Length: 322
Image (tube, rainbow, N blue to C red; front, side, top):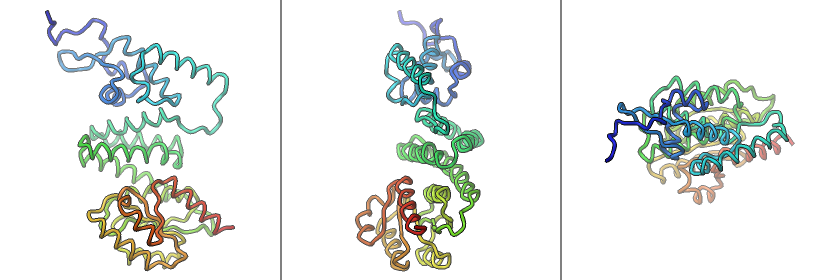
Protein backbone atom coordinates (compact mmCIF):
# COMPACT_ATOMS: atom_id res chain seq x y z
CA UNK A 1 0.00 0.00 0.00
CA UNK A 2 1.38 3.39 -1.01
CA UNK A 3 2.13 5.68 1.92
CA UNK A 4 0.41 9.08 2.10
CA UNK A 5 2.28 11.97 0.52
CA UNK A 6 2.58 13.85 3.78
CA UNK A 7 4.70 11.08 5.32
CA UNK A 8 8.41 11.72 5.03
CA UNK A 9 11.23 9.20 5.21
CA UNK A 10 12.95 9.46 8.63
CA UNK A 11 16.33 9.99 6.94
CA UNK A 12 15.09 13.20 5.27
CA UNK A 13 15.29 15.56 8.23
CA UNK A 14 17.32 18.62 7.23
CA UNK A 15 15.55 21.79 5.99
CA UNK A 16 17.21 23.83 3.26
CA UNK A 17 18.52 26.49 5.67
CA UNK A 18 20.46 23.85 7.59
CA UNK A 19 21.82 22.33 4.37
CA UNK A 20 22.92 25.76 3.17
CA UNK A 21 24.79 26.34 6.44
CA UNK A 22 26.48 22.93 6.39
CA UNK A 23 27.50 22.90 2.73
CA UNK A 24 28.34 26.56 2.15
CA UNK A 25 25.96 26.69 -0.83
CA UNK A 26 23.31 29.39 -0.96
CA UNK A 27 19.68 28.33 -0.90
CA UNK A 28 19.26 29.69 -4.43
CA UNK A 29 22.12 27.54 -5.72
CA UNK A 30 20.65 24.49 -3.96
CA UNK A 31 17.31 25.06 -5.69
CA UNK A 32 18.94 25.55 -9.09
CA UNK A 33 21.11 22.46 -8.69
CA UNK A 34 18.00 20.44 -7.85
CA UNK A 35 15.76 21.90 -10.55
CA UNK A 36 18.20 22.17 -13.44
CA UNK A 37 20.74 19.41 -12.77
CA UNK A 38 18.89 16.95 -10.47
CA UNK A 39 22.04 16.85 -8.34
CA UNK A 40 19.94 15.62 -5.40
CA UNK A 41 16.24 14.95 -4.99
CA UNK A 42 14.97 16.15 -1.61
CA UNK A 43 11.57 15.10 -0.41
CA UNK A 44 8.78 17.47 0.64
CA UNK A 45 7.00 17.67 3.95
CA UNK A 46 3.28 18.28 4.31
CA UNK A 47 3.85 22.01 3.88
CA UNK A 48 5.82 21.58 0.65
CA UNK A 49 9.19 22.40 2.22
CA UNK A 50 12.34 20.61 1.06
CA UNK A 51 13.92 18.08 3.42
CA UNK A 52 17.35 16.58 2.78
CA UNK A 53 18.91 13.38 4.05
CA UNK A 54 22.42 12.96 5.49
CA UNK A 55 23.40 11.40 2.17
CA UNK A 56 22.11 14.47 0.33
CA UNK A 57 24.15 16.77 2.57
CA UNK A 58 27.28 14.67 2.05
CA UNK A 59 26.80 14.65 -1.73
CA UNK A 60 26.19 18.41 -1.87
CA UNK A 61 29.29 19.07 0.23
CA UNK A 62 31.32 17.01 -2.25
CA UNK A 63 29.78 18.85 -5.20
CA UNK A 64 30.59 22.18 -3.59
CA UNK A 65 34.23 21.14 -3.17
CA UNK A 66 34.47 19.82 -6.72
CA UNK A 67 32.96 22.93 -8.34
CA UNK A 68 35.21 25.24 -6.34
CA UNK A 69 38.16 23.28 -7.72
CA UNK A 70 37.01 24.29 -11.20
CA UNK A 71 34.78 21.40 -12.23
CA UNK A 72 31.42 21.98 -13.92
CA UNK A 73 28.24 21.11 -12.01
CA UNK A 74 26.69 20.04 -15.31
CA UNK A 75 29.28 17.26 -15.63
CA UNK A 76 29.28 16.29 -11.97
CA UNK A 77 25.58 16.20 -11.15
CA UNK A 78 24.81 12.75 -12.57
CA UNK A 79 27.95 10.99 -11.31
CA UNK A 80 27.65 8.46 -8.46
CA UNK A 81 28.66 9.91 -5.11
CA UNK A 82 31.69 7.62 -4.81
CA UNK A 83 33.03 8.96 -8.13
CA UNK A 84 32.69 12.53 -6.87
CA UNK A 85 34.50 11.53 -3.67
CA UNK A 86 37.40 10.26 -5.77
CA UNK A 87 37.54 13.48 -7.79
CA UNK A 88 37.56 15.58 -4.61
CA UNK A 89 40.40 13.46 -3.22
CA UNK A 90 42.38 13.93 -6.44
CA UNK A 91 41.83 17.69 -6.37
CA UNK A 92 42.93 17.86 -2.73
CA UNK A 93 46.17 16.00 -3.49
CA UNK A 94 46.83 18.29 -6.46
CA UNK A 95 46.33 21.42 -4.36
CA UNK A 96 48.70 20.18 -1.65
CA UNK A 97 51.42 19.31 -4.15
CA UNK A 98 51.21 22.63 -6.01
CA UNK A 99 50.08 25.77 -4.16
CA UNK A 100 47.84 28.15 -6.09
CA UNK A 101 49.77 31.02 -7.66
CA UNK A 102 49.34 34.54 -6.33
CA UNK A 103 46.71 36.52 -8.20
CA UNK A 104 44.84 33.44 -9.45
CA UNK A 105 41.36 34.24 -10.71
CA UNK A 106 38.18 32.56 -9.55
CA UNK A 107 37.59 28.99 -10.69
CA UNK A 108 34.87 28.30 -13.28
CA UNK A 109 32.89 26.42 -10.63
CA UNK A 110 32.93 29.39 -8.26
CA UNK A 111 31.95 31.76 -11.06
CA UNK A 112 29.07 29.51 -12.04
CA UNK A 113 27.86 29.53 -8.43
CA UNK A 114 27.79 33.33 -8.48
CA UNK A 115 25.90 33.39 -11.79
CA UNK A 116 23.32 30.86 -10.58
CA UNK A 117 22.92 32.67 -7.27
CA UNK A 118 22.34 35.99 -9.04
CA UNK A 119 19.73 34.40 -11.30
CA UNK A 120 17.92 32.80 -8.38
CA UNK A 121 17.86 36.06 -6.45
CA UNK A 122 16.66 37.95 -9.53
CA UNK A 123 13.82 35.49 -9.95
CA UNK A 124 12.80 36.39 -6.39
CA UNK A 125 13.20 40.09 -7.32
CA UNK A 126 15.56 40.53 -4.38
CA UNK A 127 17.40 43.49 -5.85
CA UNK A 128 19.49 44.26 -2.76
CA UNK A 129 20.81 40.70 -2.61
CA UNK A 130 21.57 40.61 -6.34
CA UNK A 131 23.50 43.86 -6.05
CA UNK A 132 25.44 42.66 -3.01
CA UNK A 133 26.36 39.41 -4.80
CA UNK A 134 27.57 41.20 -7.93
CA UNK A 135 29.42 44.02 -6.20
CA UNK A 136 31.19 41.62 -3.86
CA UNK A 137 32.27 39.53 -6.85
CA UNK A 138 33.52 42.62 -8.70
CA UNK A 139 35.48 43.73 -5.63
CA UNK A 140 37.04 40.31 -5.12
CA UNK A 141 37.92 39.68 -8.76
CA UNK A 142 38.61 43.12 -10.19
CA UNK A 143 36.72 44.47 -13.18
CA UNK A 144 38.55 42.56 -15.98
CA UNK A 145 37.92 39.15 -14.40
CA UNK A 146 34.42 40.20 -13.31
CA UNK A 147 33.52 41.04 -16.92
CA UNK A 148 34.93 37.78 -18.29
CA UNK A 149 33.81 35.28 -15.64
CA UNK A 150 30.67 36.84 -14.12
CA UNK A 151 29.07 39.72 -16.05
CA UNK A 152 29.22 38.38 -19.61
CA UNK A 153 28.16 34.78 -18.71
CA UNK A 154 25.41 36.12 -16.44
CA UNK A 155 23.96 38.34 -19.15
CA UNK A 156 24.05 35.50 -21.68
CA UNK A 157 22.31 33.18 -19.21
CA UNK A 158 19.70 35.77 -18.33
CA UNK A 159 19.03 36.34 -22.04
CA UNK A 160 18.58 32.60 -22.58
CA UNK A 161 16.26 32.33 -19.58
CA UNK A 162 14.19 35.28 -20.79
CA UNK A 163 13.84 33.89 -24.32
CA UNK A 164 12.83 30.51 -22.86
CA UNK A 165 10.12 32.16 -20.77
CA UNK A 166 11.76 31.29 -17.46
CA UNK A 167 12.46 34.92 -16.53
CA UNK A 168 10.12 37.87 -16.74
CA UNK A 169 11.09 41.22 -18.29
CA UNK A 170 11.21 42.70 -14.78
CA UNK A 171 13.68 40.05 -13.61
CA UNK A 172 15.84 40.51 -16.73
CA UNK A 173 15.83 44.30 -16.34
CA UNK A 174 16.82 43.99 -12.67
CA UNK A 175 20.00 42.07 -13.53
CA UNK A 176 20.85 44.22 -16.55
CA UNK A 177 20.42 47.51 -14.70
CA UNK A 178 22.60 46.39 -11.77
CA UNK A 179 25.37 45.08 -14.04
CA UNK A 180 25.14 48.31 -16.04
CA UNK A 181 25.55 50.40 -12.87
CA UNK A 182 28.62 48.43 -11.77
CA UNK A 183 30.27 48.70 -15.18
CA UNK A 184 29.59 52.40 -15.68
CA UNK A 185 30.89 53.03 -12.17
CA UNK A 186 34.07 51.18 -13.12
CA UNK A 187 34.44 53.35 -16.21
CA UNK A 188 34.29 56.49 -14.08
CA UNK A 189 36.71 55.07 -11.52
CA UNK A 190 39.46 54.19 -14.01
CA UNK A 191 41.68 57.11 -14.97
CA UNK A 192 43.16 56.89 -18.46
CA UNK A 193 46.88 57.42 -18.83
CA UNK A 194 48.07 60.70 -20.39
CA UNK A 195 47.61 60.80 -24.17
CA UNK A 196 45.58 57.57 -24.09
CA UNK A 197 43.69 56.80 -27.31
CA UNK A 198 40.00 57.63 -27.21
CA UNK A 199 37.07 55.35 -27.91
CA UNK A 200 33.41 56.31 -28.27
CA UNK A 201 30.90 53.67 -27.13
CA UNK A 202 27.16 53.76 -27.89
CA UNK A 203 24.22 51.87 -29.39
CA UNK A 204 22.53 52.93 -32.65
CA UNK A 205 19.15 54.61 -33.04
CA UNK A 206 16.40 52.17 -32.09
CA UNK A 207 18.51 50.02 -29.76
CA UNK A 208 17.74 50.93 -26.15
CA UNK A 209 19.76 48.07 -24.62
CA UNK A 210 22.80 49.81 -23.14
CA UNK A 211 24.22 46.81 -21.26
CA UNK A 212 26.38 45.61 -24.16
CA UNK A 213 27.83 49.08 -24.57
CA UNK A 214 28.59 49.22 -20.85
CA UNK A 215 30.50 45.92 -21.09
CA UNK A 216 32.53 47.32 -23.97
CA UNK A 217 33.18 50.64 -22.24
CA UNK A 218 34.35 49.03 -19.00
CA UNK A 219 36.61 46.59 -20.86
CA UNK A 220 38.13 49.46 -22.86
CA UNK A 221 38.65 51.54 -19.72
CA UNK A 222 40.63 48.85 -17.93
CA UNK A 223 42.73 48.47 -21.08
CA UNK A 224 43.81 52.08 -20.62
CA UNK A 225 41.59 53.76 -23.20
CA UNK A 226 39.90 57.09 -22.63
CA UNK A 227 36.23 56.14 -22.92
CA UNK A 228 33.50 58.48 -24.15
CA UNK A 229 30.39 56.52 -23.18
CA UNK A 230 27.21 57.87 -24.77
CA UNK A 231 24.76 55.10 -23.85
CA UNK A 232 21.82 53.91 -25.91
CA UNK A 233 19.68 54.90 -28.88
CA UNK A 234 21.80 57.52 -30.65
CA UNK A 235 21.42 58.45 -34.37
CA UNK A 236 24.43 57.99 -36.64
CA UNK A 237 24.76 61.74 -37.28
CA UNK A 238 25.07 62.47 -33.56
CA UNK A 239 27.56 59.66 -33.01
CA UNK A 240 29.71 60.90 -35.90
CA UNK A 241 29.59 64.49 -34.66
CA UNK A 242 30.66 63.45 -31.16
CA UNK A 243 33.44 61.28 -32.57
CA UNK A 244 34.80 64.22 -34.56
CA UNK A 245 34.58 66.64 -31.65
CA UNK A 246 36.31 64.23 -29.27
CA UNK A 247 38.87 63.11 -31.87
CA UNK A 248 38.34 59.42 -31.12
CA UNK A 249 40.39 56.62 -32.64
CA UNK A 250 37.67 53.97 -32.44
CA UNK A 251 33.88 54.00 -32.44
CA UNK A 252 32.42 50.86 -30.83
CA UNK A 253 28.73 50.17 -31.36
CA UNK A 254 26.78 47.52 -29.47
CA UNK A 255 23.70 46.07 -31.13
CA UNK A 256 21.67 43.78 -28.87
CA UNK A 257 18.18 43.78 -30.32
CA UNK A 258 16.72 46.06 -32.94
CA UNK A 259 13.48 45.38 -34.76
CA UNK A 260 14.25 45.50 -38.46
CA UNK A 261 17.76 44.47 -39.50
CA UNK A 262 17.65 46.76 -42.53
CA UNK A 263 17.19 49.85 -40.36
CA UNK A 264 20.21 49.13 -38.18
CA UNK A 265 22.25 48.25 -41.25
CA UNK A 266 21.34 51.59 -42.80
CA UNK A 267 22.28 53.39 -39.56
CA UNK A 268 25.67 51.70 -39.42
CA UNK A 269 26.33 52.29 -43.12
CA UNK A 270 25.52 55.97 -42.60
CA UNK A 271 27.84 56.13 -39.61
CA UNK A 272 30.70 54.53 -41.52
CA UNK A 273 30.26 57.06 -44.32
CA UNK A 274 30.32 59.97 -41.83
CA UNK A 275 33.51 58.84 -40.05
CA UNK A 276 37.00 59.52 -41.38
CA UNK A 277 38.75 56.48 -42.84
CA UNK A 278 41.33 56.46 -40.05
CA UNK A 279 38.61 56.02 -37.39
CA UNK A 280 37.83 52.34 -36.95
CA UNK A 281 34.19 51.35 -36.56
CA UNK A 282 33.72 48.16 -34.56
CA UNK A 283 30.30 46.59 -34.07
CA UNK A 284 29.33 43.67 -31.85
CA UNK A 285 26.40 42.05 -30.07
CA UNK A 286 23.73 39.49 -30.79
CA UNK A 287 21.89 41.87 -33.08
CA UNK A 288 24.64 41.95 -35.72
CA UNK A 289 24.84 38.24 -36.44
CA UNK A 290 22.30 38.36 -39.25
CA UNK A 291 24.01 41.29 -40.97
CA UNK A 292 27.67 40.54 -40.28
CA UNK A 293 28.50 39.86 -43.93
CA UNK A 294 27.01 43.16 -45.07
CA UNK A 295 28.88 45.02 -42.32
CA UNK A 296 32.22 43.55 -43.34
CA UNK A 297 31.56 44.60 -46.93
CA UNK A 298 31.14 48.18 -45.63
CA UNK A 299 34.58 48.12 -43.96
CA UNK A 300 32.97 47.76 -40.53
CA UNK A 301 34.75 45.39 -38.17
CA UNK A 302 32.55 42.81 -36.45
CA UNK A 303 33.52 41.32 -33.08
CA UNK A 304 31.42 38.59 -31.49
CA UNK A 305 32.80 38.86 -27.96
CA UNK A 306 34.23 41.34 -25.48
CA UNK A 307 37.46 39.36 -25.57
CA UNK A 308 37.69 39.86 -29.33
CA UNK A 309 37.16 43.58 -28.93
CA UNK A 310 39.86 43.80 -26.25
CA UNK A 311 42.33 42.04 -28.56
CA UNK A 312 41.48 44.52 -31.33
CA UNK A 313 41.92 47.50 -28.99
CA UNK A 314 45.32 46.20 -27.94
CA UNK A 315 46.36 45.91 -31.58
CA UNK A 316 45.19 49.45 -32.31
CA UNK A 317 46.76 50.84 -29.13
CA UNK A 318 50.13 49.33 -30.00
CA UNK A 319 49.89 50.97 -33.40
CA UNK A 320 49.00 54.32 -31.88
CA UNK A 321 51.78 54.31 -29.29
CA UNK A 322 54.39 52.43 -31.31
